[in-house]
Image 1 (cartoon, protein in one colour):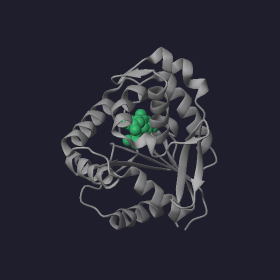
Image 2 (tube, protein in one colour):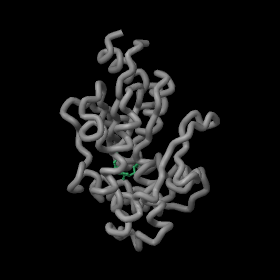
Image 3 (tube, helix red, strand yellow):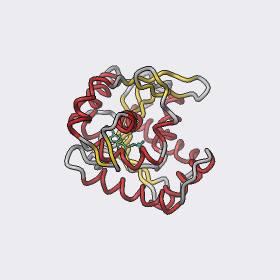
Length: 231
Ligand code: DC
């Protein structure tokens, strides 16, 4: 494949396999993969554990005041073939994926000060290219000049079923209805928030993977990548 190390921005709805897809692309190209949703989840976890969120109502002032105390970084985990996220030195990869964090993350990710801090970190991490970054505002706000922008989506029930399988396989006691409601309410929150709402960048290409296998998605990607970098 081509030697030019570009920025690949992947945005889209929650639970549509963005991270799996982004991770596979990064491995294929030898790029760094950055899961920006994990960063919003990490801030949410810290706020939950430090009394800044009650019944999913985020105390904006408290969260803003604690931002400087939240040190987020990623470390590559060769066993997973991906990076684990750390908050103040603690590996929180498992803790950030619970339904409790999922239910509260929209409230935290709509806070301007949180977005400013995380966007600045993301821009620094991707500055030199060779990066696949997934999120909601990567192609629109974080890297509006990214060479390849992909907007991913899938049917909401298909997404809920995938997430349900993942969580129950880990032993989480959740219902499909609860997950479906979370998927739909996060779509709504992500697309209607005042700051950096989820939207397709004009120059993004759409990937609806409702009925596609991971292999089919990779074939689709190879074609699009070659079109952009012109191998
Ligand atoms: O990708 P995810 O579902 O793990 O993301 C968790 C939440 O973080 C999602 O509901 C919206 C928010 N998010 C965001 O606002 N901006 C991003 N770049 C990434 C995630």
